[in-house]
Length: 303
Image 1 (cartoon, helix red, strand yellow):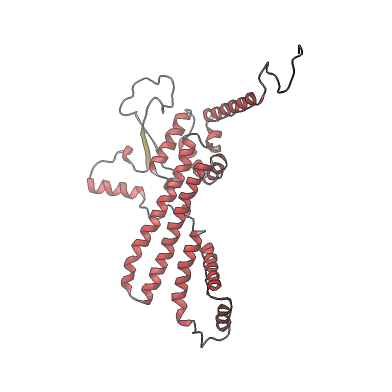
Image 2 (cartoon, helix red, strand yellow; image 1 turned 120 degrees about the horizontal axis):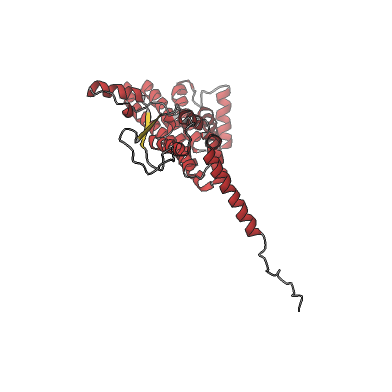
């Protein structure tokens, strides 16, 4: 509730700054304005302030922006950084240093072929790299690497990891709903992070409009405050990526099941099914009475 309310207050202040010259004074009011002044004096100041707050809340609900929808804004493309490094360092490009790739060192745990997990690896083939998916800007690089290693260690030789990671991004919103049902405590952490992200982004955007309105009314130098509002938006984007990191780490740690990964990775689906069967068996065993035990109040036949 605080995000639409804070956003609505700022937007309502912008509307007042833009239209204050056209609002008549109470003594000169006529028509609708005269009725509004009369109603305000009739219900009193507290009710009037409550009505203004409700109007601000409605405005904020209409203008609210979800931080996850703009998490890729204000970020320099990784390919630009790679080009700049080539120009200024004048070094030959190394494919493994491409910022568009997720790179990690191959280990016996993450190795895809289980033939000889203890065999040493050369420096060349000890690195594994996959391209960052299109939704990669919605999460941190470290979380994406954890997800790629998780998928790679459970994939077969015929599994194409890149499109699989891409389809996983389409499931992020559904993972939040499953997390709410499966782990309420972890979901509360995710929900707080999302709320903080939405608050920063919406206050940042509305504050940038407020700075523009004040600059138009007073001085152009007020525009110098615009970078501060952009910084607030970028902080909100960072919080949105942290929220998605929580979902990714929940899948990697086994707290959350991804239907996309389970359908594509037979080993993961088998492990999940086995764990589910074991849990069902344990529940059945605990619910059944022990063999040879007497029911309370039962008498022995010999008695």
